[in-house]
Length: 286
Image (cartoon, rainbow, N blue to C red; front, side, top):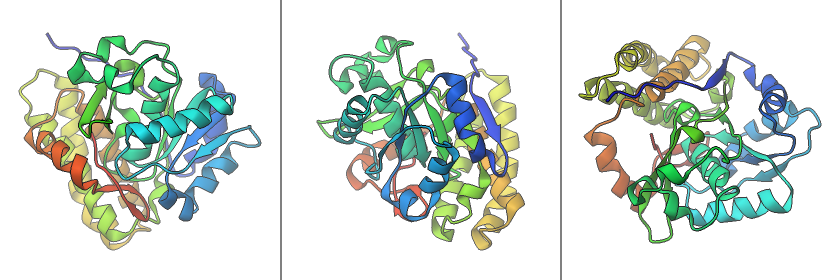
C-alpha cells in the first residue's frame, strides 16, 4: 500500500526569516521555545531569528548537542514548561530540528521518550497533541524541516527514529541567507547528505511517483551547485539551489531511504559527527 502525504507549509526565499513572527501567529504559537546550539548562536544566526520575533516573548535552549539526546530534550522541555511556552521553534541544522521535535513530543505526551520510538511500536502513540513546531534550517543537508521523523539518542545509548505525520513542522522557513556563513567543509558535507537523500529515495523500490520526480529534480540542483556553494559561500544562486535540494530530498524520502542511512545510525550514536550549525559538528539524520 502506497501512502503519499505532503503537508508542510514552506516559506522559501532570501530574507524569509522575517516571516517568523507571522508564522508563529498563524500556527498558534504565542511564546516559543527557540531550540538551537552554540554554533548557531556564535554565528549570529540565532539573533536574526530572535529579532524576527518582533517583541514576542520567548525562551531559548541553546545547548543542543551534536546528536540530540533524551537528556538534552529533558533539559529543553524543562525550560519549555517553566517558561510557559506553547511551541518550539528550531533554528539550526538537523540536530536542533530533531531536538525540537523531541520537545514537541515530551512536552505533550506522558512517559519516557523511548516509548514513542518507531522500533518500540511508538509511532501510533504520537498524537495530534504534539506541540506546533516551526523549523528554520541553517544548513542544506538533512531536510528535517519538512520530514516526519527525528533521530534521537535515548538513555540506553541507542540512536532511534521517531516517526509520525504529527511531527512534520507546521512551517518550514527556508532562508538561504542563513547558510552564507557555513564553512566550505560543512557546506560540502551537508550538501552530500542532501544528494544522498535524493539518490537513495529514487532508488528505493517503494511506489511513490511524486517522490521520484522531486528526488530527481533535487539531485540535479544539488549536483549542479554543491561545488559552487563550497567554493564561494556567498553565491546566492548556489546557496538557494542547494537549500532546495536539501528540502526536496527530505520531501522525497517519505518514500524511503536505503543502506547508506541505515548503516550511518549506529556510528552516529557513538561518534556524534556530522553537521548542524555554521561552526560546530553535528548529526545528519534524515
